[in-house]
Image (cartoon, rainbow, N blue to C red; front, side, top):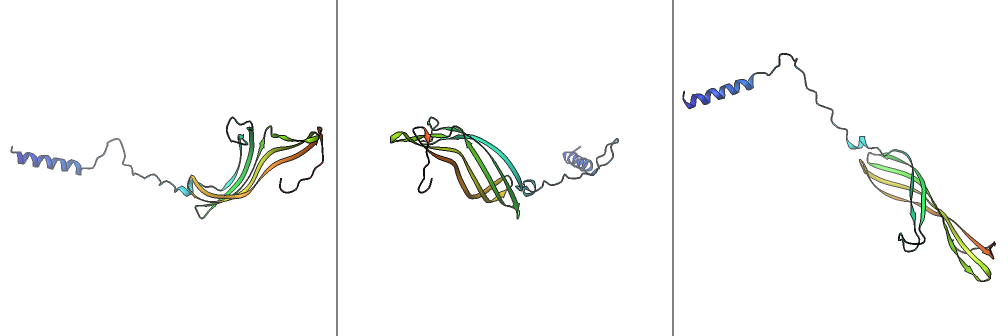
Length: 169
């Protein structure tokens, strides 16, 4: 047999095998159904809802180092709500309060046994935000009101004394 005839027979057999339908004797033919397409990110992530949480940390006065003598334990709670609309915009509100442990910051001594002390019991805020989301991420601007829960006291010879302040505390 010549090389040309061998090539022709090989190509013909290959075409015949590829053209014949494949079937197994013990299986019935099945139709294939593709899996559903994944949902878009906006449908998977939704920032609408309420939340409550807690936090712990520390508060420092002065030079803001871990060895600062003014370091104190801080712990608190926060709660808020967000609403997502149009489909990537988010608005929300949040309130938080943090308690400070061992918050008496000492005092300033005055002549005749007088001492003025300040006690910061906690820190808090009430804020609102607006932002733009892309699934799990949220870029936002936030503003609101923050405050310190503190008291000012005066004592003379260890006895609390009435006093008045002028200006902001």
